[in-house]
Length: 143
Length: 379
Ligand SMILES: [Zn+2]
View 1 (cartoon, rainbow over the protein chains, first blue to last red):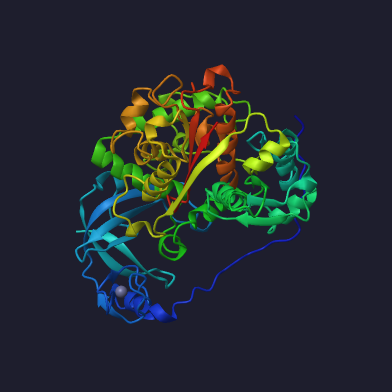
View 2: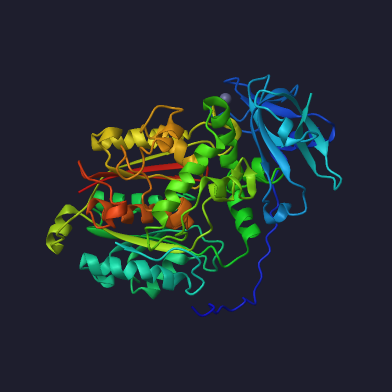
Protein backbone atom coordinates (compact mmCIF):
# COMPACT_ATOMS: atom_id res chain seq x y z
CA UNK A 1 0.00 0.00 0.00
CA UNK A 2 1.16 3.55 -0.73
CA UNK A 3 2.29 5.62 2.22
CA UNK A 4 -0.74 7.63 3.45
CA UNK A 5 -0.53 11.33 2.68
CA UNK A 6 -1.21 13.97 5.31
CA UNK A 7 -0.83 17.70 5.74
CA UNK A 8 1.06 18.92 8.78
CA UNK A 9 -1.41 21.36 10.31
CA UNK A 10 -0.07 24.94 10.33
CA UNK A 11 -1.99 25.70 13.56
CA UNK A 12 -0.75 24.71 17.01
CA UNK A 13 -2.78 24.67 20.20
CA UNK A 14 -1.03 24.71 23.55
CA UNK A 15 -3.21 24.63 26.64
CA UNK A 16 -2.12 25.44 30.20
CA UNK A 17 -4.98 25.51 32.69
CA UNK A 18 -5.21 27.79 35.71
CA UNK A 19 -6.35 25.56 38.57
CA UNK A 20 -8.61 27.43 41.05
CA UNK A 21 -7.67 26.69 44.69
CA UNK A 22 -9.27 29.61 46.58
CA UNK A 23 -11.56 27.38 48.60
CA UNK A 24 -8.90 24.77 49.37
CA UNK A 25 -5.99 27.19 49.79
CA UNK A 26 -5.30 25.99 53.35
CA UNK A 27 -4.43 22.58 51.91
CA UNK A 28 -1.89 24.01 49.45
CA UNK A 29 -0.44 26.42 52.05
CA UNK A 30 -0.31 23.55 54.54
CA UNK A 31 1.85 21.52 52.20
CA UNK A 32 4.41 24.33 52.18
CA UNK A 33 4.44 24.20 56.01
CA UNK A 34 4.96 20.43 55.97
CA UNK A 35 1.35 19.57 56.86
CA UNK A 36 -1.23 17.47 55.01
CA UNK A 37 -4.80 18.55 55.65
CA UNK A 38 -8.12 16.86 54.99
CA UNK A 39 -11.54 18.41 55.59
CA UNK A 40 -14.25 17.20 57.97
CA UNK A 41 -17.93 17.95 57.38
CA UNK A 42 -19.38 19.78 60.39
CA UNK A 43 -22.79 18.17 59.86
CA UNK A 44 -22.33 14.51 58.87
CA UNK A 45 -18.79 14.18 60.19
CA UNK A 46 -17.40 12.68 57.00
CA UNK A 47 -13.64 13.05 56.58
CA UNK A 48 -12.71 14.04 53.03
CA UNK A 49 -9.39 13.41 51.33
CA UNK A 50 -8.59 14.88 48.89
CA UNK A 51 -10.02 17.91 50.74
CA UNK A 52 -13.29 19.47 49.56
CA UNK A 53 -15.02 22.77 50.34
CA UNK A 54 -18.51 21.26 49.93
CA UNK A 55 -19.72 17.97 51.40
CA UNK A 56 -21.20 15.82 48.63
CA UNK A 57 -22.45 13.39 51.27
CA UNK A 58 -24.89 15.78 52.92
CA UNK A 59 -24.76 18.97 50.87
CA UNK A 60 -23.31 21.22 53.57
CA UNK A 61 -20.63 23.78 52.69
CA UNK A 62 -19.27 24.16 56.20
CA UNK A 63 -16.19 22.02 56.58
CA UNK A 64 -13.33 22.25 59.05
CA UNK A 65 -9.68 21.56 58.34
CA UNK A 66 -8.17 18.45 59.94
CA UNK A 67 -4.46 17.71 59.86
CA UNK A 68 -3.69 14.11 58.91
CA UNK A 69 -1.17 12.17 60.90
CA UNK A 70 0.05 10.52 57.67
CA UNK A 71 0.50 6.96 58.97
CA UNK A 72 -0.84 4.46 56.50
CA UNK A 73 -0.63 1.06 54.87
CA UNK A 74 -0.21 0.28 51.14
CA UNK A 75 -3.38 -1.06 49.55
CA UNK A 76 -2.02 -1.30 46.02
CA UNK A 77 0.63 0.27 43.76
CA UNK A 78 2.23 0.34 40.33
CA UNK A 79 5.35 1.67 38.66
CA UNK A 80 4.86 3.82 35.58
CA UNK A 81 7.44 3.18 32.86
CA UNK A 82 5.70 4.58 29.77
CA UNK A 83 4.93 8.14 30.82
CA UNK A 84 2.58 10.87 29.59
CA UNK A 85 4.18 13.63 27.48
CA UNK A 86 4.25 16.16 30.34
CA UNK A 87 6.09 13.68 32.64
CA UNK A 88 8.64 12.63 30.02
CA UNK A 89 11.57 14.12 31.96
CA UNK A 90 10.73 12.27 35.20
CA UNK A 91 12.44 8.97 35.99
CA UNK A 92 10.04 6.01 36.19
CA UNK A 93 7.83 6.57 39.28
CA UNK A 94 5.91 4.38 41.75
CA UNK A 95 2.30 5.40 42.44
CA UNK A 96 0.65 3.90 45.52
CA UNK A 97 -2.76 3.97 47.15
CA UNK A 98 -2.63 3.68 50.94
CA UNK A 99 -5.25 3.60 53.66
CA UNK A 100 -4.47 6.19 56.33
CA UNK A 101 -5.13 5.50 59.99
CA UNK A 102 -7.92 8.12 59.93
CA UNK A 103 -9.80 5.80 57.52
CA UNK A 104 -9.47 7.70 54.24
CA UNK A 105 -7.23 6.55 51.40
CA UNK A 106 -4.80 8.64 49.37
CA UNK A 107 -3.05 8.23 46.02
CA UNK A 108 0.48 9.61 45.67
CA UNK A 109 4.01 8.78 44.57
CA UNK A 110 5.95 6.41 46.80
CA UNK A 111 9.59 7.50 46.94
CA UNK A 112 12.80 6.31 48.53
CA UNK A 113 12.26 2.63 47.78
CA UNK A 114 12.68 0.23 44.88
CA UNK A 115 9.49 -1.30 43.45
CA UNK A 116 10.83 -4.83 44.12
CA UNK A 117 10.77 -4.02 47.85
CA UNK A 118 7.20 -2.66 47.91
CA UNK A 119 4.52 -4.98 49.29
CA UNK A 120 0.75 -4.68 49.71
CA UNK A 121 0.20 -4.08 53.43
CA UNK A 122 3.51 -2.26 53.91
CA UNK A 123 3.57 0.68 56.37
CA UNK A 124 4.18 4.11 54.85
CA UNK A 125 3.84 7.76 55.83
CA UNK A 126 2.14 10.48 53.79
CA UNK A 127 4.28 13.62 53.91
CA UNK A 128 4.14 17.09 52.38
CA UNK A 129 6.85 18.03 49.93
CA UNK A 130 7.89 21.08 47.95
CA UNK A 131 9.60 20.19 44.69
CA UNK A 132 12.83 21.80 43.47
CA UNK A 133 10.75 23.99 41.15
CA UNK A 134 8.60 25.19 44.07
CA UNK A 135 5.51 23.06 43.48
CA UNK A 136 3.63 21.91 46.60
CA UNK A 137 2.78 18.22 46.60
CA UNK A 138 2.65 15.17 48.88
CA UNK A 139 4.11 11.69 48.73
CA UNK A 140 4.44 8.42 50.59
CA UNK A 141 7.72 7.39 52.15
CA UNK A 142 8.55 4.04 53.74
CA UNK A 143 8.67 3.96 57.57
CA UNK B 1 -24.86 -2.15 10.93
CA UNK B 2 -21.48 -1.18 9.51
CA UNK B 3 -17.92 -1.56 10.75
CA UNK B 4 -14.69 -0.17 9.31
CA UNK B 5 -11.41 -1.99 9.28
CA UNK B 6 -9.64 -1.13 12.57
CA UNK B 7 -5.96 -0.20 12.75
CA UNK B 8 -3.75 2.68 11.68
CA UNK B 9 -6.18 4.39 9.37
CA UNK B 10 -4.01 7.34 8.38
CA UNK B 11 -5.34 6.74 4.86
CA UNK B 12 -8.64 8.45 5.73
CA UNK B 13 -9.88 11.45 7.70
CA UNK B 14 -12.51 11.36 10.45
CA UNK B 15 -15.52 11.83 8.15
CA UNK B 16 -14.28 9.36 5.57
CA UNK B 17 -13.74 6.81 8.32
CA UNK B 18 -17.25 7.39 9.71
CA UNK B 19 -18.67 7.02 6.16
CA UNK B 20 -17.17 3.49 5.98
CA UNK B 21 -19.47 2.43 8.82
CA UNK B 22 -22.49 4.68 8.22
CA UNK B 23 -23.08 3.92 4.52
CA UNK B 24 -23.32 0.11 4.86
CA UNK B 25 -25.49 0.45 7.97
CA UNK B 26 -27.96 2.61 6.05
CA UNK B 27 -27.95 0.28 3.04
CA UNK B 28 -28.71 -2.75 5.20
CA UNK B 29 -31.53 -0.97 7.02
CA UNK B 30 -33.22 0.15 3.76
CA UNK B 31 -33.15 3.74 5.07
CA UNK B 32 -31.56 6.66 3.27
CA UNK B 33 -29.51 9.28 5.07
CA UNK B 34 -32.34 11.81 4.55
CA UNK B 35 -34.77 9.56 6.43
CA UNK B 36 -32.65 9.33 9.58
CA UNK B 37 -34.19 11.72 12.14
CA UNK B 38 -31.47 11.46 14.78
CA UNK B 39 -27.81 10.53 15.13
CA UNK B 40 -25.94 9.99 18.40
CA UNK B 41 -22.15 9.90 18.06
CA UNK B 42 -19.68 8.33 20.47
CA UNK B 43 -16.31 10.04 20.13
CA UNK B 44 -13.72 11.43 22.52
CA UNK B 45 -11.83 13.44 19.94
CA UNK B 46 -8.96 15.71 21.04
CA UNK B 47 -6.51 13.52 19.05
CA UNK B 48 -8.31 14.52 15.87
CA UNK B 49 -8.84 18.08 14.74
CA UNK B 50 -12.62 18.50 14.64
CA UNK B 51 -14.24 19.80 17.86
CA UNK B 52 -17.78 19.23 16.49
CA UNK B 53 -17.42 15.77 14.95
CA UNK B 54 -21.15 14.96 14.89
CA UNK B 55 -21.88 17.98 12.69
CA UNK B 56 -18.95 17.43 10.36
CA UNK B 57 -19.76 13.73 9.91
CA UNK B 58 -23.47 14.41 9.41
CA UNK B 59 -22.71 16.86 6.61
CA UNK B 60 -20.24 14.47 4.97
CA UNK B 61 -22.66 11.53 5.11
CA UNK B 62 -25.78 13.43 4.00
CA UNK B 63 -27.44 13.45 7.42
CA UNK B 64 -27.64 17.25 7.85
CA UNK B 65 -30.93 18.27 9.39
CA UNK B 66 -31.19 15.26 11.70
CA UNK B 67 -30.97 15.85 15.44
CA UNK B 68 -27.35 15.40 16.52
CA UNK B 69 -25.41 14.84 19.71
CA UNK B 70 -21.88 13.79 20.57
CA UNK B 71 -21.78 11.69 23.76
CA UNK B 72 -18.82 11.44 26.13
CA UNK B 73 -18.42 8.56 28.55
CA UNK B 74 -14.68 8.05 27.94
CA UNK B 75 -14.10 4.53 26.56
CA UNK B 76 -17.86 3.90 26.88
CA UNK B 77 -18.81 6.88 24.70
CA UNK B 78 -20.16 4.48 22.07
CA UNK B 79 -22.49 2.86 24.59
CA UNK B 80 -23.50 6.28 25.88
CA UNK B 81 -24.47 7.19 22.31
CA UNK B 82 -26.39 3.91 22.00
CA UNK B 83 -28.20 4.60 25.28
CA UNK B 84 -29.05 8.10 24.09
CA UNK B 85 -30.45 6.88 20.75
CA UNK B 86 -32.17 3.88 22.37
CA UNK B 87 -33.90 6.21 24.83
CA UNK B 88 -35.04 8.46 21.98
CA UNK B 89 -36.59 5.52 20.11
CA UNK B 90 -37.91 3.76 23.20
CA UNK B 91 -39.67 6.92 24.38
CA UNK B 92 -41.46 7.27 21.05
CA UNK B 93 -39.75 10.58 20.29
CA UNK B 94 -38.01 9.05 17.24
CA UNK B 95 -39.04 6.05 15.11
CA UNK B 96 -35.42 5.34 14.20
CA UNK B 97 -31.95 6.60 15.06
CA UNK B 98 -28.39 6.07 13.95
CA UNK B 99 -25.68 5.25 16.49
CA UNK B 100 -22.14 5.95 15.32
CA UNK B 101 -18.77 5.52 16.97
CA UNK B 102 -15.64 6.99 15.42
CA UNK B 103 -12.14 7.70 16.65
CA UNK B 104 -8.92 8.78 14.93
CA UNK B 105 -6.17 8.36 17.52
CA UNK B 106 -3.17 8.13 15.20
CA UNK B 107 -3.04 11.80 14.18
CA UNK B 108 -0.85 12.72 17.17
CA UNK B 109 2.17 11.16 18.93
CA UNK B 110 1.83 8.35 21.50
CA UNK B 111 3.06 10.28 24.62
CA UNK B 112 0.37 12.88 23.92
CA UNK B 113 -2.28 10.15 23.60
CA UNK B 114 -1.11 8.84 27.02
CA UNK B 115 -1.30 12.41 28.32
CA UNK B 116 -4.92 12.79 27.20
CA UNK B 117 -6.10 9.40 28.51
CA UNK B 118 -4.03 9.70 31.70
CA UNK B 119 -5.92 12.88 32.53
CA UNK B 120 -9.17 10.88 32.30
CA UNK B 121 -9.54 10.11 35.98
CA UNK B 122 -9.61 12.91 38.54
CA UNK B 123 -7.20 15.29 36.84
CA UNK B 124 -6.47 17.43 39.91
CA UNK B 125 -5.69 14.61 42.33
CA UNK B 126 -4.31 11.85 40.12
CA UNK B 127 -2.62 13.49 37.16
CA UNK B 128 -1.40 17.00 37.97
CA UNK B 129 1.19 15.78 40.47
CA UNK B 130 1.25 12.03 39.96
CA UNK B 131 1.08 11.44 36.21
CA UNK B 132 -1.24 8.46 36.30
CA UNK B 133 -1.70 6.72 32.96
CA UNK B 134 -4.50 4.51 31.67
CA UNK B 135 -2.35 1.36 32.05
CA UNK B 136 -1.39 2.50 35.58
CA UNK B 137 -5.05 2.76 36.67
CA UNK B 138 -5.55 -0.87 35.69
CA UNK B 139 -2.15 -1.96 36.99
CA UNK B 140 -3.19 -1.07 40.56
CA UNK B 141 -6.15 -3.41 40.08
CA UNK B 142 -3.90 -6.18 38.76
CA UNK B 143 -1.60 -5.85 41.81
CA UNK B 144 -4.46 -6.17 44.29
CA UNK B 145 -6.14 -8.99 42.34
CA UNK B 146 -2.84 -10.87 42.32
CA UNK B 147 -2.25 -10.22 46.03
CA UNK B 148 -5.76 -11.26 47.05
CA UNK B 149 -6.62 -14.13 44.67
CA UNK B 150 -3.26 -15.41 43.49
CA UNK B 151 -3.86 -14.36 39.88
CA UNK B 152 -0.52 -14.47 38.06
CA UNK B 153 1.13 -12.59 35.20
CA UNK B 154 0.87 -15.86 33.22
CA UNK B 155 -2.91 -15.90 33.78
CA UNK B 156 -3.14 -12.37 32.42
CA UNK B 157 -1.00 -13.37 29.44
CA UNK B 158 -3.49 -16.15 28.65
CA UNK B 159 -6.20 -13.52 28.13
CA UNK B 160 -3.99 -11.77 25.55
CA UNK B 161 -3.18 -15.08 23.84
CA UNK B 162 -6.88 -15.99 23.59
CA UNK B 163 -7.94 -12.61 22.24
CA UNK B 164 -5.11 -12.48 19.71
CA UNK B 165 -6.13 -15.95 18.51
CA UNK B 166 -9.62 -14.62 17.72
CA UNK B 167 -8.26 -11.33 16.40
CA UNK B 168 -6.32 -13.39 13.86
CA UNK B 169 -9.68 -14.75 12.63
CA UNK B 170 -11.27 -11.29 12.32
CA UNK B 171 -10.40 -9.48 9.09
CA UNK B 172 -11.46 -6.15 10.63
CA UNK B 173 -9.13 -6.45 13.66
CA UNK B 174 -6.12 -4.19 14.21
CA UNK B 175 -3.79 -6.99 15.40
CA UNK B 176 -4.32 -10.17 13.42
CA UNK B 177 -1.33 -12.22 14.55
CA UNK B 178 -1.34 -14.91 17.21
CA UNK B 179 1.00 -14.51 20.19
CA UNK B 180 2.41 -16.75 22.91
CA UNK B 181 2.51 -16.46 26.70
CA UNK B 182 6.31 -16.00 26.46
CA UNK B 183 5.90 -13.12 24.05
CA UNK B 184 3.52 -11.37 26.47
CA UNK B 185 5.75 -12.01 29.51
CA UNK B 186 8.86 -10.81 27.67
CA UNK B 187 7.30 -7.63 26.29
CA UNK B 188 8.36 -4.28 27.75
CA UNK B 189 6.81 -3.12 31.03
CA UNK B 190 4.32 -0.28 30.53
CA UNK B 191 2.97 0.09 34.09
CA UNK B 192 4.14 -2.77 36.28
CA UNK B 193 2.90 -5.54 36.26
CA UNK B 194 1.22 -4.74 32.93
CA UNK B 195 3.38 -5.22 29.86
CA UNK B 196 2.96 -4.15 26.25
CA UNK B 197 0.93 -7.22 25.29
CA UNK B 198 -1.36 -6.80 28.32
CA UNK B 199 -2.52 -3.50 26.78
CA UNK B 200 -4.89 -2.73 23.93
CA UNK B 201 -3.29 -0.89 21.00
CA UNK B 202 -3.96 2.70 19.97
CA UNK B 203 -6.43 2.28 17.12
CA UNK B 204 -8.47 4.15 14.54
CA UNK B 205 -11.88 2.82 13.59
CA UNK B 206 -15.59 3.37 13.16
CA UNK B 207 -18.82 1.42 13.64
CA UNK B 208 -22.51 2.21 13.18
CA UNK B 209 -25.85 0.60 13.94
CA UNK B 210 -29.39 1.69 13.04
CA UNK B 211 -32.00 1.43 15.80
CA UNK B 212 -35.70 1.32 14.97
CA UNK B 213 -38.94 0.93 16.89
CA UNK B 214 -40.85 -2.33 16.48
CA UNK B 215 -43.38 -0.53 14.28
CA UNK B 216 -40.74 1.07 12.08
CA UNK B 217 -38.83 -2.22 11.75
CA UNK B 218 -42.04 -3.91 10.51
CA UNK B 219 -42.69 -1.04 8.08
CA UNK B 220 -39.17 -1.39 6.69
CA UNK B 221 -39.61 -5.14 6.42
CA UNK B 222 -36.47 -5.90 8.46
CA UNK B 223 -36.19 -9.67 8.10
CA UNK B 224 -33.97 -10.63 10.99
CA UNK B 225 -34.15 -7.96 13.68
CA UNK B 226 -31.91 -8.06 16.74
CA UNK B 227 -33.52 -6.40 19.77
CA UNK B 228 -32.01 -4.37 22.56
CA UNK B 229 -33.59 -6.09 25.56
CA UNK B 230 -31.98 -3.94 28.22
CA UNK B 231 -29.30 -1.37 28.92
CA UNK B 232 -27.92 -1.05 32.43
CA UNK B 233 -25.97 2.07 33.37
CA UNK B 234 -23.88 2.96 36.43
CA UNK B 235 -20.80 4.85 37.60
CA UNK B 236 -18.08 4.96 40.25
CA UNK B 237 -15.94 7.63 41.92
CA UNK B 238 -13.56 9.76 39.87
CA UNK B 239 -10.81 9.37 42.52
CA UNK B 240 -9.60 5.75 42.63
CA UNK B 241 -8.60 6.40 46.25
CA UNK B 242 -12.30 6.71 47.19
CA UNK B 243 -13.12 3.14 46.17
CA UNK B 244 -13.48 0.22 48.57
CA UNK B 245 -11.38 -2.31 46.65
CA UNK B 246 -9.32 -2.70 43.48
CA UNK B 247 -10.25 -6.25 42.56
CA UNK B 248 -13.24 -5.32 40.43
CA UNK B 249 -15.28 -2.46 39.01
CA UNK B 250 -18.43 -1.68 40.98
CA UNK B 251 -19.96 0.15 37.99
CA UNK B 252 -19.83 -3.12 36.02
CA UNK B 253 -21.51 -5.00 38.86
CA UNK B 254 -24.30 -2.42 39.15
CA UNK B 255 -24.87 -1.94 35.41
CA UNK B 256 -24.99 -5.70 34.78
CA UNK B 257 -27.41 -6.38 37.62
CA UNK B 258 -29.67 -3.64 36.25
CA UNK B 259 -29.49 -5.11 32.74
CA UNK B 260 -30.13 -8.71 33.90
CA UNK B 261 -33.15 -7.54 35.91
CA UNK B 262 -34.59 -5.52 33.01
CA UNK B 263 -34.10 -8.39 30.54
CA UNK B 264 -35.34 -10.99 33.04
CA UNK B 265 -32.27 -13.18 32.57
CA UNK B 266 -29.29 -14.39 34.58
CA UNK B 267 -25.63 -14.61 33.49
CA UNK B 268 -26.00 -18.30 32.59
CA UNK B 269 -28.51 -17.40 29.86
CA UNK B 270 -25.86 -15.44 27.92
CA UNK B 271 -24.59 -17.25 24.80
CA UNK B 272 -21.79 -14.85 23.91
CA UNK B 273 -20.29 -11.70 25.41
CA UNK B 274 -17.97 -8.87 24.52
CA UNK B 275 -16.31 -7.47 27.64
CA UNK B 276 -14.18 -4.38 28.06
CA UNK B 277 -10.66 -5.85 27.94
CA UNK B 278 -8.67 -2.62 27.51
CA UNK B 279 -6.08 -4.50 29.62
CA UNK B 280 -5.88 -8.23 30.32
CA UNK B 281 -6.74 -7.75 34.01
CA UNK B 282 -9.92 -5.93 32.92
CA UNK B 283 -11.22 -9.06 31.21
CA UNK B 284 -10.54 -11.21 34.29
CA UNK B 285 -12.36 -8.71 36.52
CA UNK B 286 -15.24 -8.46 34.01
CA UNK B 287 -15.94 -12.22 34.22
CA UNK B 288 -16.33 -11.79 37.97
CA UNK B 289 -18.18 -8.48 37.97
CA UNK B 290 -20.69 -9.69 35.37
CA UNK B 291 -21.40 -12.83 37.38
CA UNK B 292 -19.93 -15.30 34.87
CA UNK B 293 -18.05 -16.75 37.87
CA UNK B 294 -17.48 -16.05 41.55
CA UNK B 295 -15.17 -13.25 42.67
CA UNK B 296 -11.56 -14.40 42.39
CA UNK B 297 -12.36 -17.14 39.87
CA UNK B 298 -11.75 -15.09 36.72
CA UNK B 299 -8.25 -16.37 36.06
CA UNK B 300 -9.45 -19.96 36.41
CA UNK B 301 -12.06 -19.35 33.69
CA UNK B 302 -9.42 -18.31 31.19
CA UNK B 303 -7.01 -21.06 32.30
CA UNK B 304 -9.71 -23.71 31.72
CA UNK B 305 -10.84 -22.29 28.37
CA UNK B 306 -14.36 -21.54 29.59
CA UNK B 307 -14.48 -18.31 27.61
CA UNK B 308 -13.38 -19.73 24.28
CA UNK B 309 -15.69 -20.92 21.48
CA UNK B 310 -16.92 -24.28 22.76
CA UNK B 311 -16.48 -23.19 26.38
CA UNK B 312 -19.22 -22.30 28.83
CA UNK B 313 -19.48 -18.68 27.66
CA UNK B 314 -17.38 -17.43 24.74
CA UNK B 315 -16.00 -13.94 25.45
CA UNK B 316 -14.38 -11.50 23.02
CA UNK B 317 -14.27 -13.96 20.15
CA UNK B 318 -13.81 -10.98 17.83
CA UNK B 319 -10.38 -10.31 19.36
CA UNK B 320 -11.69 -7.90 22.00
CA UNK B 321 -10.21 -4.47 22.59
CA UNK B 322 -6.90 -6.28 23.06
CA UNK B 323 -6.52 -7.48 19.45
CA UNK B 324 -9.40 -5.97 17.49
CA UNK B 325 -8.35 -2.59 18.88
CA UNK B 326 -9.95 0.08 21.04
CA UNK B 327 -10.83 3.26 19.15
CA UNK B 328 -12.19 4.85 22.34
CA UNK B 329 -15.65 6.11 21.33
CA UNK B 330 -16.13 3.39 18.71
CA UNK B 331 -15.77 0.39 21.00
CA UNK B 332 -19.32 0.34 22.42
CA UNK B 333 -20.83 0.52 18.94
CA UNK B 334 -18.37 -2.04 17.58
CA UNK B 335 -19.53 -4.44 20.32
CA UNK B 336 -23.17 -4.03 19.23
CA UNK B 337 -22.22 -4.63 15.59
CA UNK B 338 -20.19 -7.74 16.45
CA UNK B 339 -22.89 -9.21 18.69
CA UNK B 340 -25.54 -8.58 16.02
CA UNK B 341 -23.43 -10.67 13.62
CA UNK B 342 -22.93 -13.34 16.30
CA UNK B 343 -26.67 -13.51 17.01
CA UNK B 344 -27.37 -13.85 13.28
CA UNK B 345 -24.68 -16.55 13.09
CA UNK B 346 -22.90 -14.65 10.34
CA UNK B 347 -19.27 -14.77 11.54
CA UNK B 348 -16.58 -17.28 10.53
CA UNK B 349 -17.44 -20.72 11.98
CA UNK B 350 -14.10 -20.80 13.83
CA UNK B 351 -15.16 -17.85 15.97
CA UNK B 352 -18.95 -18.26 15.94
CA UNK B 353 -20.38 -18.86 19.41
CA UNK B 354 -23.03 -21.59 19.50
CA UNK B 355 -26.49 -20.09 20.13
CA UNK B 356 -28.90 -21.63 22.62
CA UNK B 357 -30.92 -18.67 23.85
CA UNK B 358 -29.90 -16.20 21.13
CA UNK B 359 -28.87 -13.82 23.90
CA UNK B 360 -25.71 -11.69 23.91
CA UNK B 361 -24.14 -9.27 26.36
CA UNK B 362 -21.97 -6.20 25.70
CA UNK B 363 -19.95 -4.80 28.62
CA UNK B 364 -18.37 -1.41 28.00
CA UNK B 365 -16.68 0.65 30.69
CA UNK B 366 -15.42 4.22 30.48
CA UNK B 367 -12.21 5.23 32.20
CA UNK B 368 -11.35 2.78 34.99
CA UNK B 369 -14.93 1.73 35.65
CA UNK B 370 -15.88 5.37 35.97
CA UNK B 371 -18.76 4.74 33.60
CA UNK B 372 -20.42 1.33 33.30
CA UNK B 373 -22.72 0.19 30.48
CA UNK B 374 -24.12 -3.30 29.98
CA UNK B 375 -26.39 -4.07 27.03
CA UNK B 376 -28.37 -7.27 26.47
CA UNK B 377 -29.25 -8.14 22.88
CA UNK B 378 -31.61 -10.85 21.71
CA UNK B 379 -32.61 -12.26 18.35
ZN1 LIG C 1 -21.52 16.14 55.22
